[in-house]
Length: 247
Image 1: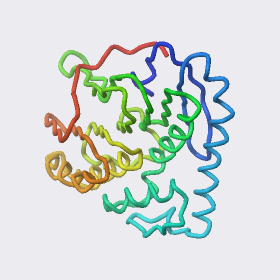
Image 2: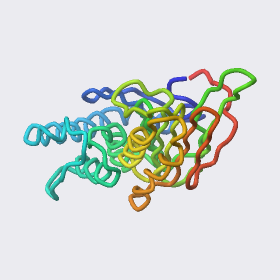
Image 3: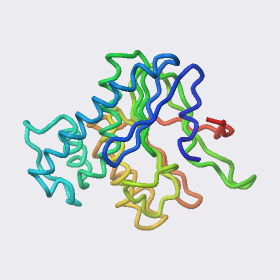
Image 4: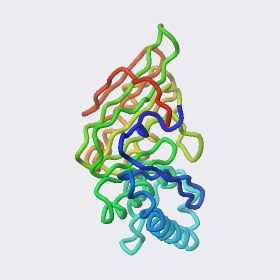
């Protein structure tokens, strides 16, 4: 289902942007998207180039499967990635998509009141309206689709395993993983921690417990589906999946 229901915003205009290995999709008020495109490219490349420069001097940051210390002088995106990875006990690069989506959205929010940035399974929204994400499109009458409803008004990061194809942490034996957080890197770090804990479909409670290490980092809610088991922690509202829209 690709970008899911998060792209069903009446009155929003969208454009796509390539930054390094990530494909971003940026949404803002219809009519303003064209004027925001150049600024989006500038801020996205700024953060990407800072990340590349840091990795050039700290090559282990790109390949490590465990947290690595990040100094105070590191670029903001690198610090966000390092802090989330450290709290979750995972490698820092798994947090890249969410960290970049947040950095770009926050920078663009100084130019537009409502901004949404998505990249595969990650979304970061500033002053966005309430939205329903399809986290499981279902499989006929016996397995109806499932969505997560996120209230609007406050910035949020949302990760879903649906629609993610590259640069994503394995979700182990889970069928569905969804994470709501204050920060993009935290959402990705929680998803990766879940994948490491889900070594068997019965490990849902174990995986939920693994994410609690991120509660102090802005983790808001988690949904895990494995087989017929549904595990939920925190503030996450499960709703029936809306019908697909033509985007």
